[in-house]
Image 1: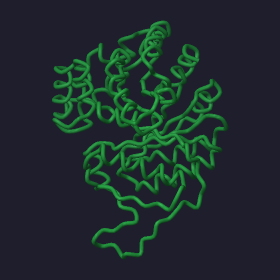
Image 2: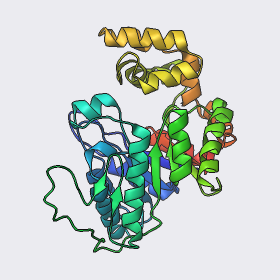
Image 3: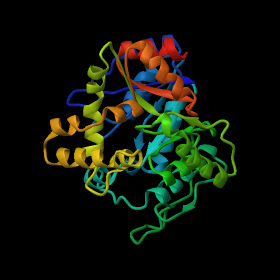
Image 4: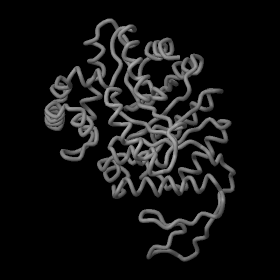
Length: 339
């Protein structure tokens, strides 16, 4: 099982811990992954990290599909891959309706169809087999809409990119996970539970079958919060605010993908309470409603020996890369236990 590092830097001020990045590279981590929500973007930090490192791969986890045309994403990926000496990995995701429509001003639409078209266009650009032409529900290239000039010309990238550049998809639901297995090179799950590996395997196998492909080279890379310390309860308390934010506040009532995850794991009552409290402005109460058992399913918390036991469970669940979100102590501890 490989290790990767998730760079957490969202907030009012942008600060990237380059010392932690360089330590991860020294320790043998496989890759570093950036992020974006509705503030800082994923591409600029990826370029910054690639420029400061020499061996470790750099990925976007994730670039939001509604924020960029497929051609712009392909251009960005080829550019970063070329400048980094072939060390770039493209992570994509559709985000959610609140961000897509409320921030980017784009219709949310049908995420499965949109993602499928998007990846197909990006791959066609990377391959450079012929000038780009595509006719889909969401993307028409060249554009032929009612306001088209009629002068659009099929083009082929001037830059010769790496045709096999890896594409990862962030996905949480059964159909989205199956799509990742069908058309992508890797899957980035959030709030992954090693104890539910049989359920995830069914979703993935459905996608592999649909794509007529093997699972052998597919990278399952869940992001996991890691908090190392002698007091398990205190370590869990570090994770609970993030769980409360996502399960309670990252979406509307009836349309929160992260709340769906908690319910799917059997925490229906807790998920309902967390959402009610969070959306009512009672964040502390929402955090207090997060079950310890849920934290233990999706995070690694406590003393090193306890985390060692948990890591063994994750290794046996089909995970091929563990995307670590944690401080420098967490980074070193996981390297000692897993590499």
